Amino acid sequence: MKVDRLVSIIMILLDKKRIGAQELADLFEVSPRTIYRDIDAISMAGIPVCSISGVGGGFEIMQEYKMDKKVFSADDLSALLMGLSSLSNIVRGDELVHALTKVRSFIPADRAKDIELKVNQICIDLSPWTGSSIQPYLEIIKSALQENRLLTFEYTAHHGNKTARTVEPYQLVLKSSHWYLQGYCQIRHDFRLFRLSRMADLQMQEEAFVPRDYQKPVLDFAEMLETMQTKIKIRIHQSVMDRVLDYCSYEDFSPDGDDHYLVSFPFIENEYHYDILLSFGDKCECLEPLHIRMEMKRRIHDIASLYEN
Image 1 (spheres, rainbow, N blue to C red):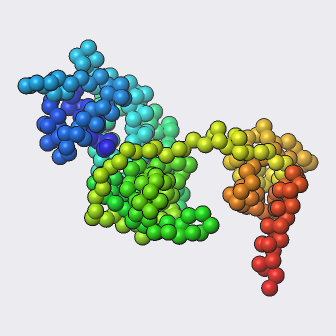
Image 2: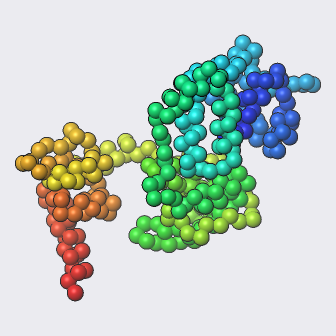
């Protein structure tokens, strides 16, 4: 569902008293079914659009809620512009450029400076510092989503296992600065979440698919992690404090001499969390529990053995 189309439909409904689904479909070169989905999305956003059946029928905004350009406050327009601008840094495309232009058209001249000041007070830049090598993949997936086309790629999963996948794409997900594709894997016969950085040789196929009932990915593991995590005791040098704070809070730290801290560190006994501790190098020592300390010692010995010869 394109952002610019939704904004455009809202603007048309503001300017016209009533317009039919087929007329909107012809205008945007989509099916009437797509227009009905767009109208549902606009209604869910809080803009009361009603449908009039019969000759001369169509969609219109309820008269008692009729809006004009003044309906958007400076804060409203600032929020819209900040959101669209942050997306335009990572998802390139004409639709976002058009949407930004249309939102700016709502800005009255006498409020332009005030709104520009508010927008510039917060910068949301989700693009990586060193540039993105997955940008071409984002464009391929966007096209496949719009056209309901199958995607094929080679995927590197846990422990370096590589498999060839054929996937029906359903959603692009940006989570914790990483892009994912939620899709139905025809190899596994189930919905899967694929990280784009682990894909290779991504290709959009000529073959289209009929969309099935979509299962949204589970993106919040807070409750699950609370039951799985345990607190371990580590001693760190102050030079890695900033990195350790990515995983816990100041309340978990207590001073231990002039240059060190004792930390109550959230931990799950898996490869990922052992790798986190190892990433702190000699600036981190696991004190307890004993079995995790001994496992760290074994892993460090295995690493050291690689350099013996």
